[in-house]
Length: 192
Image (cartoon, rainbow, N blue to C red; front, top):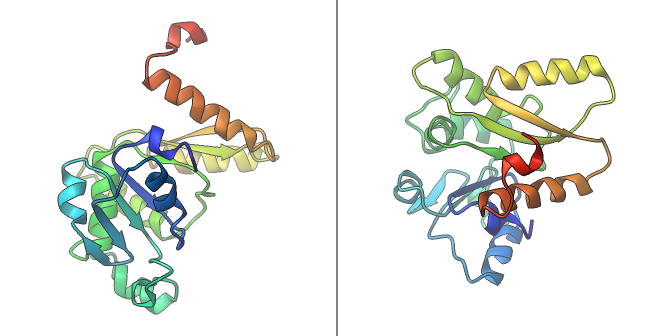
């Protein structure tokens, strides 16, 4: 989590309720000017469309029960059934999916509401979807790996596998990405 300020200066999406992300950024004297907690928002869309730092807590904020999205009825109200892209949460997720290259960290990317929404947007075929990336533990089964890889690639999400239960690889991959982004190492040095 301490590497997040070095990875992005745009939007961060989390399913966590706590303020751990805010605290990491606060230590670096970086504030989030825009946020969305569940469906409650403050300067979120204006910051999002400008590519500025903002924070989206999908399930709400621990300090505000009225922001929670946990129960099925709360999901239906927040997302619509079927998806209603006039509602703030699906509208924001669609905007992020179609206009940014996302990096998924610490999530399983199994079937959930966010992936269902991305699938819906992809199936509409109204947008050019950028490439997204996910750092994931490699499944033990080659069949499970291929199935998951196919499902993710269909959503323009490229999995970057690391050995299962070797989570230290995540930090190494992130440090490598930071070094490359800051031109401390090039793809030619990696043999690419």
